[in-house]
Image (cartoon, one colour):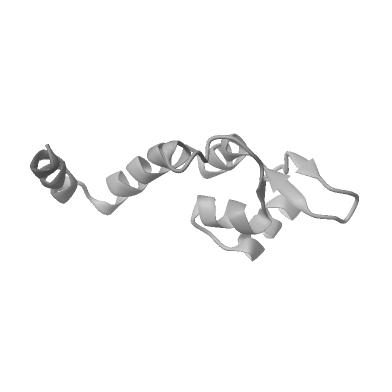
Amino acid sequence: MSRLVDLILEELDEDALERLATRLRPHLRGERDGWLDAKQAAEYAGTTVPAVHTAVSRGTLTPSSQSKPGGRLYFTREALDEWRGL
């Protein structure tokens, strides 16, 4: 079976591999549940913390929760996937 997987992966381009990784990510290491802070959100979305903060300030990404006004922002994977257009 691993030979088949290797052959399939060799045929995928970078865009297809990224889409596959995004779809698999929630199923790895029990990551489906829980909230992501800005650093974790940036890592999940494949971007930087400043890019996440910029998206929030522009209104293109809405945090799912905030610890207090001016405090830490928390995001769901669903919100990040929507922001990325997945």
